[in-house]
Length: 285
Length: 325
Image (cartoon, rainbow over all chains, first blue to last red; front, side, top):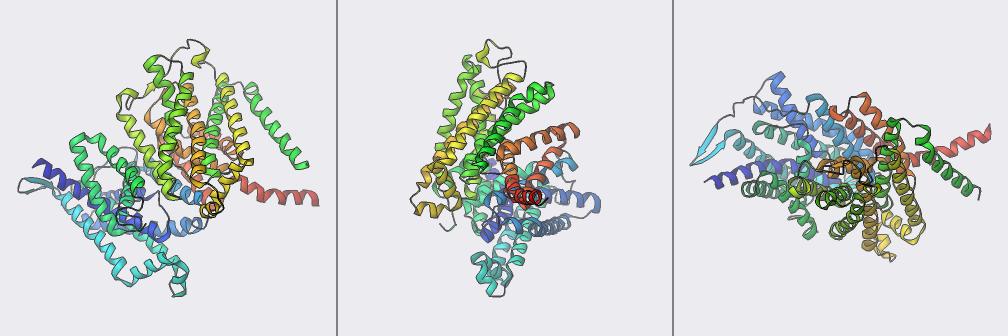
């Protein structure tokens, strides 16, 4: 029974991994660009949730929406001010730009909020649910369910709406899309907004259930890499599966081997994927 | 001919300046900065071979730095061997690791390689933190009191400075030789376009692998020197992501893929870092890293070629102004 609980807990955390990783994979698929600051977006989402709860009040719906909106705006701003210019430059400056951004955001949070762990005050989602012997904190359950819904929602947005078609058209062929009357710059700005927004809301969902400190961004960023590599670069559905798999692997390896070894297993999996199947589970070769 | 002469004079002047610096500024504070400068210049120049010339942006070079740093202290702790013996062992391990990492990851191009190197460095960092033999999260210590010169444990910074400077000189000579040989042309061809290079008959994977191994050799040596000088190493100061980032930013600031770029980058960044640490009260507040991040973003946005490129665009303008006057 404990093992079943470990599995369900892992899947619920994996659902949140899937949500923020789908943001990273969207950017990669759109413009062949890896955002090294993606984990920092998740971390900022957590602090936005905290600030909203402390100063404005409001329930989980309020602060999650606030985190998504704040990060959406930040994502668009970063695209307009920085990314738009460096994508045309050499690869070194592409990597440096988001890497520098990650340091800037991480240590700004460090400076403002200090290195201490914080957690959200009690919300309406406190309490535990008893599912026939499996005890689950209500917060984790709701966060996981919302994360899965949003990830599927993002997938549907890309595959079943006009905006999604426009985004995919720019990803496919920038100049052909331009000839069809689509503005690539706007679509890419939108993609950055969606990507950061997904990370922000994932951060708010994580904040409901787990404590955090400014350096969590590094861990989440690496987890997002592993998820995207496993799921296939550019595939939202792939990152949904991969996120759930990684949550599961993390939880079971922490259960069997001990908590400190779970990262070794996850990064080892990453190296193995890059070695044997660089295109990932769902990626095109 | 005239250009060659002036370049040679410039190099001699630079060498004289570096050799005489600690004799003129004998204050331990300045000598400490000078040692930090040589170390940063060695690591960044080593990174430059694969990251700058070949354009394979590794963000996990701390894996070689860390192996190099652990080897001397590990064999000292286990068997009492002088740290000097650990340096070549660290280099051999690093070359082996470069082969192991390079074979699969160098097939991947661009961002994949960067991500893979980060993941491997993190994997090793976490692994060393849990491995009791290498001291776990606490790390290892070197000899407290020297048993002889071969322990390379000195009270003063001066001997370290000249040893590090010699290694830096050797590395710059090797880089100079690389860039004027066929191998160097291969590297730049791969950087410009891998597909074009391959179609012209450049053995792309072998060349990249060789560059990674050469780079790993000197990065590992830099790690060994750091550990011997500090007399202490732990997973974060050996394999931490900031160790890799420092190499990247130093090289990129001066100009990645140029001979003296990393040197110039270290010349600017190391004093700046010391100043930031002094003014802002240590690295505990994180302001130093905010500064780092800001500099990196600004270079990427406005001067992707680094200061070297900036100077190359600026110098004809100045010369014209001088001639006109």
